[in-house]
Length: 85
Image 1 (cartoon, rainbow, N blue to C red):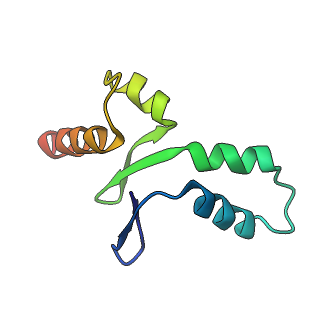
Image 2: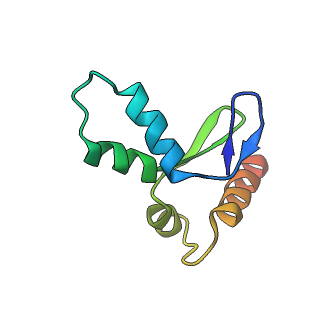
């Protein structure tokens, strides 16, 4: 799920993410490999704070949630942040 600036939510579309990154990197020395790596990275943000960042596999490993969905990890991370506050 991708949350837009106006809080609309859209299903994740890797091709759309790559197209947006390519457009932002026009006329800059950024390789397609780097753009694809950027599209595979996930940032979990809650209340303006970056709670976790990495690929899905990295997030699963960091949070000890081997086969969890991204949504389940998001809920757990946000809940953990709320209880720590």
